Length: 106
Image 1 (cartoon, rainbow, N blue to C red):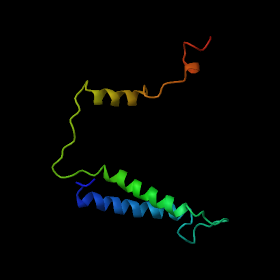
Image 2: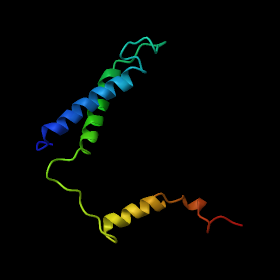
Image 3: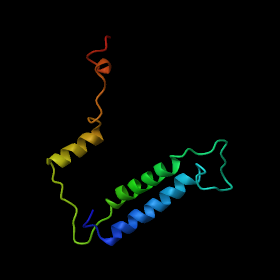
Image 4: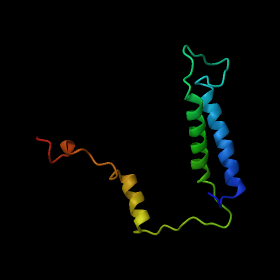
């Protein structure tokens, strides 16, 4: 993160601010005329919202391309290609042992 360009930090800031508004308005941490609360928010609501916003910004910034870097090439049969195909095919989510067809009578 120390080598991130200013563009990525801008994305972190903008995303964090948008996250605070998108989460803060319906939870009425930010008072507004559209939503209401029957109970006051807890003391830890704002710290959790701030941490959520910062982490959302950091994750979003990892998707911002930096100048001069290219996407890694994925060749057929490479470990990356095989893992992508297994995710698409559903092999990444095995059934519990009791639900396998060999274990089910009938």
